[in-house]
Amino acid sequence: MALPIPPVQAIDTETTGLAPHGSDTMFSYSLCDWDGKTSVHRLDGGPIRQTTNHANLDKFWSDTSIEKTMFNAKFDTLFCEKKLGKRLAEQSVIHDSYIMSHLLRSDRKVHKLKELAWELAGIPRDDEQAIHAYVRGVEENFSHVPEHLMEIYQHRDAERTMLMHRYMYPQIQANPKFLEIYKMEMDLIKVTMRMEKRGMMIHRQRTLDTMAKLEKDLALATQEFVTISEKITGQRIFPGQTAKVSKLLFKYLKLPDLADGSTSKDDVLLPLREQHPHPIIDLLLKCRSWKHGVSMLASYLDYADDTDTIHPSINTCGAGSTGRESCSKPNLQNVEKDGNLKNPFPSPARLCFRPRPDHILIPIDYAGQEMRWIVHISGDKRMLAEFNRVGSDPHSLAAGIFYPPFTEEEERDFHFVNDAIRKGFSAFKKGQKEFKMLRDSAKNTNFAKPYGCNFVKAGFILGIPEPLSKKRCAEYDAMFPDLVGCLRNGMQEVRECGYTTNDFGRRLYINPSEAYMWLNYRAQSDGAEVTKRAQVRVHKYLREATSEEVGILLAIHDEILIEYPRKRLKDIGDIMGNIHKLMTTFPEASVPMEIEAKLCTVSWAQKRELVWKGVA
Image 1 (spheres, rainbow, N blue to C red):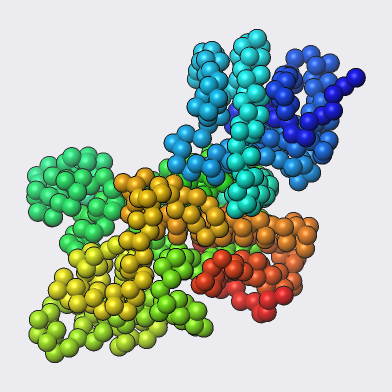
Image 2 (spheres, rainbow, N blue to C red):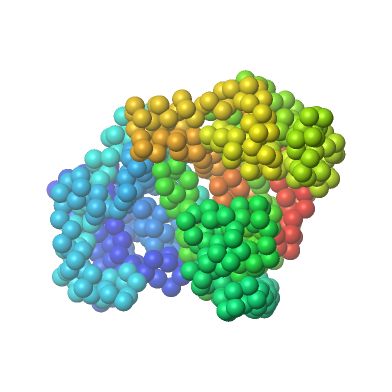
């Protein structure tokens, strides 16, 4: 008489590679029941074995009374869906001990099945060494490994998967906040699977043309760099020769050395560019940016399938300890756009992404998400009131503090300060370049102050002398004491506990020696929590309201990219109204969330405002 099927079973897949949306396929899977009984099922070999184990896989997923537990559930489920030719994730309760590991201990250096099983249960790792002797030079294609070795390996992996579930899931269940976050994360995995499947479409010819232009511009900038360097030093120096470039900047041009001779990072060059502008710095930045741009665009073409669609791999818990998502193969979260403060010479990469035929793209950004959470976390009454005031602009408020008109005494002492700063922020109207320049500098300082920025650094950001910066910062500190003081309070918590907790209950472990990172972790984590929940809510709504004709393509930290069919444009007001409500209703926040939507008909880069009326 057969024993009753346990409520939870573990499944682990073996595949010919890591790309479920490409040519890779599953060639075997292993199962483990609640009591540790394991079995291996090959999907290759003779037709009888293939047919039998294919049917067993279908039966396993069709039995919705069984909860399925995996380690990296998105990967395993996608390959099972591909093998069976149907959706599975929405039909069963699925678990993922990879997500559990991130949720329970966000500070773990490694969240890998074998390392965790060794650390927590002492399961040996020697089976992996035997496997790797057969897969060197082949990207994770274990189908070449002799079956008797794979048998040992697969039994252990199934056992490891069940053990991790039995060890971690009770800890998740014991904390109601953890359980609520975990359920959201499992819903997000299902959303992410559909996003990856839908994919982003690239315009192949436009990409090739953009690459050709970048290569031409790169060659011209490189030649100009070499020519100028030869005039200055008497020798030809190329942008990639870091030691010689450092000597050129700091010995020959006598620029201030901000990082012990290092020029490898743009965050060293950008302050130099602001304080000591010189053509050679701009040329160096151009060469680096455009060389990276050519490589980046080439990778997009390499990853595109035969329909010119890219199916990236999205890790829903991939960005360190904050719970933010990451993206790879390729990384579509760092597709460059114009107006990038960290890169004055960006590659026009978003120009290469297009809507599908008969569709438009709708990028939806959270407006000032990070700053809103910083203010919420600080509880600063004056700044909270400003954010809650209809039509408020806290960065313009800060600009008024940092850039009042000069007094007669200041005119006498600081007559060399540029004219826009001298006149003060109130002298300019919205839309003027001086208004934008002063507001942007105040915005950057608004961010920097809660993170512990002193008046010296603030003076550099604001473009004013230190004595004047000291005075203006004192006025700002007096106006927003809780905002500038919250970092100190949070650091004490981290030093005592080793972690902090975001407003949704996620625990963020921080090394006490890096307690100064506390506010950064909190603001990023709360923002990530909102974006994740927004994806789950919006996907569910679009699935029910439009049968997935409208769908999410990608999430980029504080932005969600929607694909929208032209035939439904008559409904866009109602749909956007509901999306607005779903994305901005968060009782956890004391500061209102707000979104801004654009409309793209030609490319991701070419946007115009999308205005809708009413919220359903």
